[in-house]
Image (cartoon, rainbow, N blue to C red):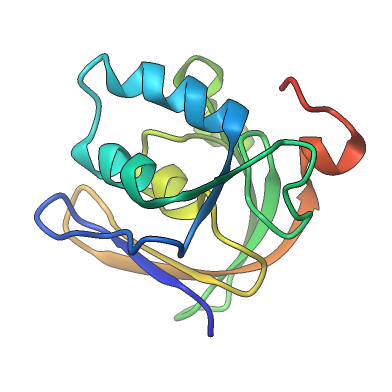
Length: 143
């Protein structure tokens, strides 16, 4: 069964064990949380399974993973890279982990459905079709 994650600050969005973070991503994101960032990120950190960067499976979305998404309604495909806020360039496909889309993707696996709400309240959903690049899969355990 694949996870469906809805990002909405009024709802608990992460069930323990439904998402996986690397120990490095967890550590870096914890430092972001201490700066008063979205409560949904706090929820993700509290409930995600944490694993070593060296042992994370290649089908898990980690920081700086490039993923291909397919919108469940329009079937439109897009490629996004989940990154830290300072590296975000939405027009180039670099989406901040603090954005609703970024938070909804992090820790999911290929085949999972990410769900989030736009600032205008629209619900969006997309299947993680593939992970085109994951730093850890290439032996990069420090990105």
